[in-house]
Structure formats: C-alpha cells, structure tokens
Image (cartoon, rainbow, N blue to C red):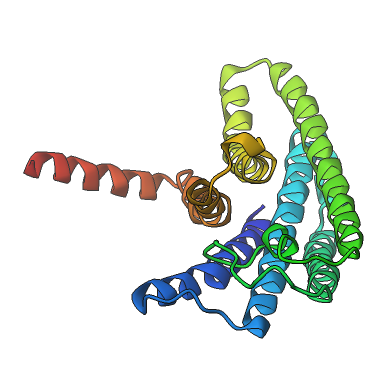
Amino acid sequence: MFFFLLNLALTDLGCIFTTVPKAMHNSLWDTRNISYTGCAAQVFFFLSFITAEYSLLTIMCYDRYVSICKPLHYGTLLGSRACARMAAAAWASGFLNALLQTANTFSLPLCQGNVLGQFFCEIPHILKLSCSKSYLRELGFLAVSACLSLGCFMFIVFSYVQIFRAVLRIPSEQGRHKAFSTCLPHLAVVSLFISTAVFAHLKPPSISSPSLDLALSVLYSVVPPFLSPLIYSLRNQELKDGLRKIFMNAFQKE
C-alpha cells in the first residue's frame, strides 16, 4: 500500500504542477495566453497523470480486496515484483491514453477562434473550437476512454461489495474497525475523484455557464489531488495530534 501511495502522490503532484503554475502566472500577469505547443503539452501531461491516478486507485482497491478477502495469498498475489509491474502498467496506460488523445485532438483544425474560457486546456473545450467532421474520431476515442473508466469503476464497486461482506463476517468489533479504517481513506479519495469528474463533465447543459464550468474545472482537477495526500495522512496519529494542537491553540487565541 505504501508503494502505491508513493506513486499516487507523484500523480497528484503532476496534476497540480501541470495546471496550477500556469494559472497562477496568468493571474499574476493579468493574461490568459498560452502557446499552442504549451496547450498540447498541458493536455498530454494532465491526461497522463489523471489516467495513471485512476489506474492506481483501481489497483489500490485490488490491494485492499486481497488483504482483507484473501490475506493468506497476499504475499503471493502482491509481491514486490507484482506491485512494480502493476504500477508500471498504470503509468504506461496513462502515457498511452494521453498520447493518443493529444495526437488526435491537436490534429483537428481549429476554426471557431482560440478562446477556451478555462484556466487550463481541456479536450472537450478544444473540440468545441473545431469545425472539422473528423471530430467524430476524437469523440470515438473519448467514448473508449469512458468505457475503460466505467470498467474500472465497476471493478471498484464489485471489490468493495466483497470487502464489506468479508468485514461484516469478522467476529470482533475491533477487527471490523481495523479493516474499515484501512479502506475508508481509499474509498474517500475514490469517491471525491469520481464524483467531481462526473459532475464536471456530465452536468445538464441547462445549468452550464462559463463561471460554473471554470469552477467545476478547478474542482475536479485541483481539489482531489490536493486533498488526497491529506486524507491518507490523517491515518497518522502524530499528524492528527499535531493538527489538534494547532486548532486548539487557534481557538484559545480567539
């Protein structure tokens, strides 16, 4: 789990550094400009990190499933070599998906202007600027990615159904609490990651507006990577004690 958490932290940092520094630069210098090459690079790296993160969250769900439902087989199914291969597969899937999506998106001619209205480059908004009929090809790639994402989501749901069934069969309350405590941080991160992305991209057109789209883009691209390390860190008792002292001192000063 700690090996996968290291990889997850790297994807979180990658997502933040791909979008936030450029947005801060534009805000400080009161500009919205980004070069064509810079936009393509931003799309590639963001897709690469976000796909790898989703793959890692799916793998971490499998890790929790094996540790709780098949604990005697954990060393065999999730040895160091198997973990390294799964992490490599997650990074490779992110790189391949980003490469295909970026190449197809930026091969389309843009004839509807060059204003995105977002704080970073997103494929759906770039497609709106294209008037080529070949945008259907890109929509096909997006549909394939959506199907793969749905497959991962179904795997996560199925795994947690099995996990909760196994936990409820544990006779001791302490054992159930310990099992749930190992799953709740991961479940919280997955829920935050999926819910923000789904709401940002599948919201009804009737409630769409430039300001809302901008807020939702920030919500799903910045908030989950920022909160993910904090959620996992709260399992550390020393960190929780430190945060408790900070809040107590703040309230005492008030």
